[in-house]
Image (cartoon, rainbow, N blue to C red; front, top):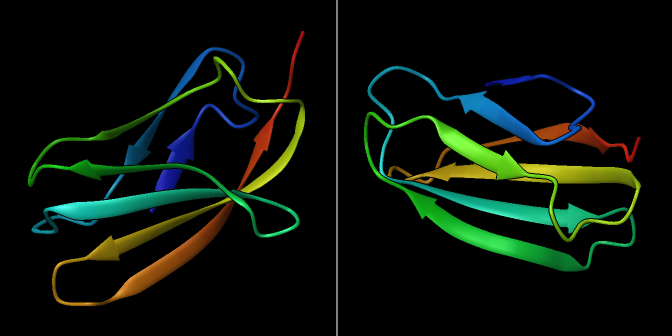
Length: 79
């Protein structure tokens, strides 16, 4: 998966693998505390909104319905 833009300033889009879906998205801070969870329907890019997030590093985990999980890092920045 690819997230653009990164760092997140307002809204970033996550490009999920073709054919994936629905996908469960879990956003956690560096301590592992889950700050957001949502489900993205099949064929729809995932949106990550900056609103309500403190500046810092976050981990976004995408879990496909076939239980494949692809973790990647998101940097959230306040300008």
